[in-house]
Amino acid sequence: MDLQLSDRRALIIGGTRGLGRAVADALAADGARLVVTGRDTDAGASAERALGPKATFIAGNIRDEDYRERLVSEAETALGGGIDILVTNAGGPPPGQFTEQPLEAWRDALETNMLAAIDLARRIVPGMAERGFGRVVNVTSFAVKEPYPNMALSNGVRTGMTGAMATLAREVIHQGVTVNNVLPGLMDTGALERVYNARAEREGTTPDKAKAALAASVPAGRLGTAEDFGPVCAFLCSPLAGYITAQNITVDGGLTRGLL
Image (cartoon, rainbow, N blue to C red; front, top):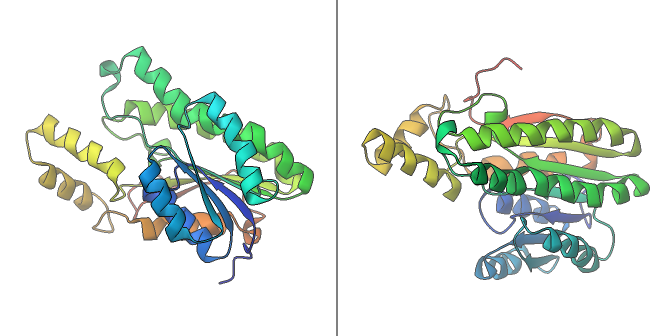
């Protein structure tokens, strides 16, 4: 399917590896112009080469407000115009129970997994609205629909961002801008390694056994992959998805048990 993304200008946060890279791969395959971000310069250089001549890597930490301000300007320069597509994606906060998390951990999680995405949308969406086209896709977590054990920070912070983005979505849809969230389940990426390592330590088992138990908990019988994820986001970034907004779309192999 032609997603009509040729030469659309996309900024993908955390686009050098994992799920963010899967989104970048899917957009690049359809001809989009890309800026991808990340902290690891080696991973960024590798991604830039693999994604092709329409891709640019800009290094930095998305938690840094000064970096976010500079990033938007540098991305527009690299892309040759205003940003059409914003994909926000940041590694989830560390696992742990509510009573184990100090207040500073909540502040860190809020900055990384909520405020950074809100700030970028605040900076970029007005330009999208002026041009009459824009797509914001936030990579969050299935935990916003069904809180997951030992994930207090993620359960709380990502749910807060979901509410903020739902409000934005309804404010700008009449100007051709959509805002949606894609909710990965238990995906076989580096981020999940922290989860099954913590589970192994808590339950006195091995990481391999903890990982296998997580996979067995998914009705699909396996962990998700980056290839399961990227095309869903790419569709939501496309002109074809212009009547879909304020949605939370799970990519989780049936893990989330809610009816809605």
